[in-house]
Length: 82
Image 1 (cartoon, rainbow, N blue to C red):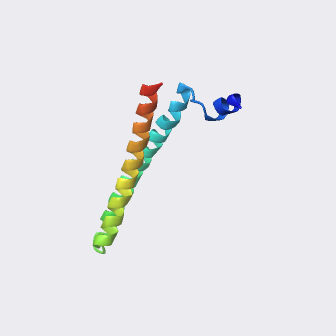
Image 2: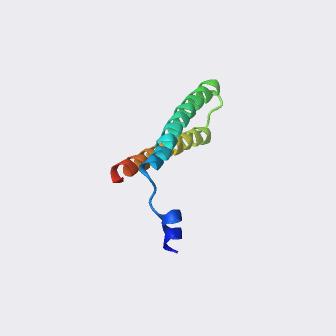
Image 3: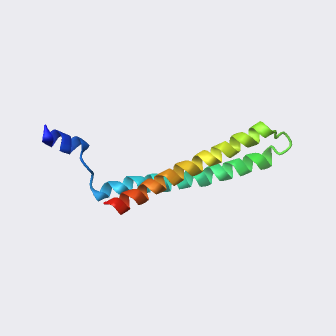
């Protein structure tokens, strides 16, 4: 039973920290894409903008930024702890 617990629930190797590095880079790329998408949308539809549309765009950017920061933080914690 101990081997089972160690195999499936034990600590992982340092190479697994690269998972968070990959997610961090992916989320940063998505943040940049979201920023440019929102900027293009605002320039194309500047006559018909209302507060709700702008607020949705802000929430989208905040969400993308938080996803990037969480994965960056997890990568840093993983590297520093192993």
